[in-house]
Image 1 (spheres, rainbow, N blue to C red):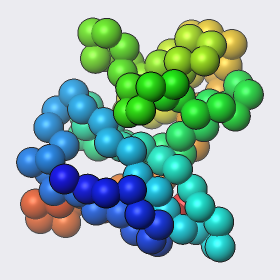
Image 2: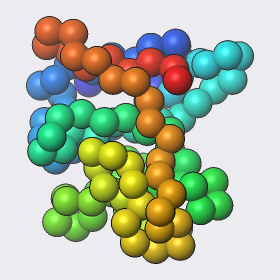
Image 3: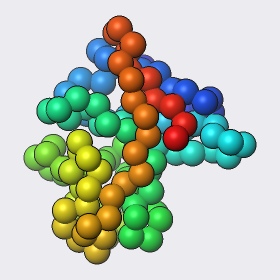
Length: 117
């Protein structure tokens, strides 16, 4: 299991991030702290800055609650915007047409690493 610490990269074991789950993390990018999250969806892994493009609030009102009830979409708990997990594209809600800011993800054997943009 990973912890919330500031570093330029964040790593999690793939066994700790099974399909249909998310995890929050914090990166230290260019002297500032950046909160993000990763989602393991049907097409792989995607990581985003935890900020809705509508008004800049975090997506999760409750810690690490990013997924819709059916687990198919990402949801902004503030205004109900719906995002496609693989692309971060807003498909419904006040930010339709916008997208979450993506973070680089790479697979390293049995772990997944997220880095600063």
